[in-house]
Amino acid sequence: MATPNLPKHDLGSLRIHDGQRGDRKLGKYIGLTLLILVIVAAISAAAYALRNQKPQVEVAAVRQPSTGPAGVLDASGYVTPRRRATIAAKITGRVTGVFFDEGTVLREGQLLATLDDSDSRRILETATADRDSAQAAIADYQVQLKNAERTLHRAEQLQKAGVQTQEALDNASTSVDSLKAKIALAKQQVSGSEARIREAQQAVNNCTIRAPFSGIAVSKDAQVGEMVSPVSAGGGFTRTGIATVVDMKSLEIEVDVNENYIARVTPHMRVEAVLDAYPDVKFDGVVRTVIPTADRQKATVKVRISFVKLDPRILPDMGVKVHFLEDQPKQKSDAPAAALAPSVALHDENGTKIVFLFRNDHIERRAVSIGAVHGSDTEIIAGLTSGDMVVVKGPDNLHDGQAVEIKK
Image (tube, rainbow, N blue to C red; front, side, top):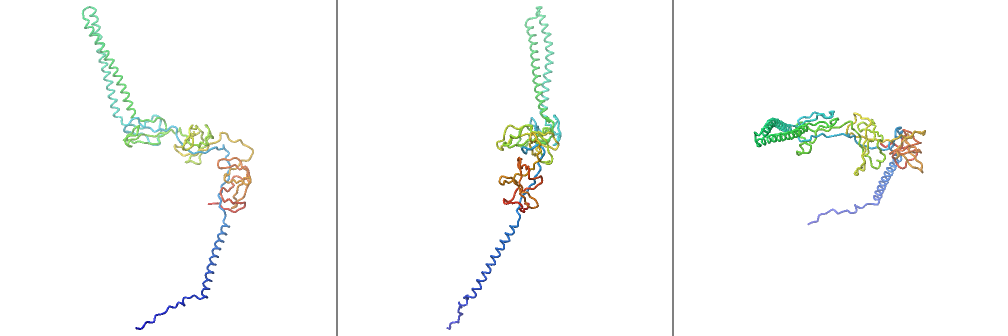
């Protein structure tokens, strides 16, 4: 059998000639060179952009200090009433009437609510009946006593005449003494009945709940048909109060002052108060008392401040910020009024205080003379005026005349 002619592999055709190798190396070098040029161009563009980008700064305005008394301390707290009471019943009972609503102006002794007094009135009627019965018995005994006294008188006369025996005289005398004892016992029964009447009447009165002082009802805590009790009972179905009454004339401010600064606060110190609800209105106050104890958890001391004049806008539990004022205003001098600048805007340069003034998108180095420090601000005696804008935050390498932009 003849062997078929199979194709032979030509391995020589896979060989790369020297000319082809040179062309590939050239293309590779060109690609690498282009990549390097692109990277250099990107770096140059980034450097140019960074070189031309303006540093961002934060600025604040220099302001004119207040001409009034200087403040020594700020604090925040709440409006609280000195007289505030949750009105509750002295006994457990069912509410039969409620005669007020939230916001009702109350006078002292005004009726607020009534409880079911049917059981107490039954007890009162029983005690009254017992008293009346005892009083009726006294009247009967007194009639019998008069008759017994007449019998005794006749017995004595007959005894003297020798007509009646001694036994009859003794019996007449015993009847008189017995009736006197019964009358005394009946009078004691009347006294006991009257004591029970007073007790029953007090129980009836306890079913009537009245306002203990004049004020405003700020909450209505029970409705007709509910059970109320002076103590929590009934598995949460029994109310413990009828109403909450606030004496609006006793409103004051209560603030917590850090114990590190409590030495600055003295009784009768003047205060400016600003309610969170009315931030544009200032209320004058005076320190009423500094509570002589500290809160170890918060490291604060409680201070109570009285309003100089109450205002209808002031309501209990409102948030308030207070500004304690110096007792005596600073003496006036011929020196010009200082400006106030944020202390963070000041920099020390070889013992000289400087600021960077922001003007026309550039900063200007300005040497200043400083005065006293007021909280986070510092007095500027010379170098700045009210309304100037100073840099309070920015890069460390700022210099005079540098172009900047305000951080958004």
